[in-house]
Image (spheres, rainbow, N blue to C red):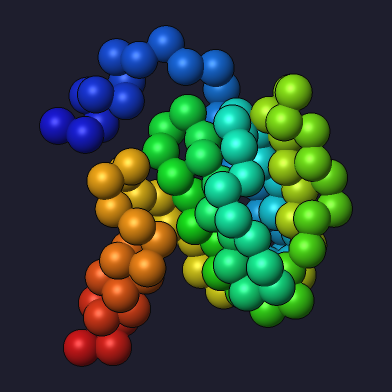
Length: 99
């Protein structure tokens, strides 16, 4: 059902390219909602994207063109919808991993 909803929208392309778990390049980013050395929360056309890791920092930021590049050790990435906070999403993800 979620897939149908996303397929029917005419959004510009959104790409996520991860190289060696250290360099992350994204297109289709609308806004950087929050960030620190352990977590970034980005708003994309397809929902919010939480990126967790160590020593994270912005390499490139061009919101006019929707481009963001992040460097650091990437440990986890996940999408969530507007109604769910990044903290709630993180709890769900990690509770599944450590059952």
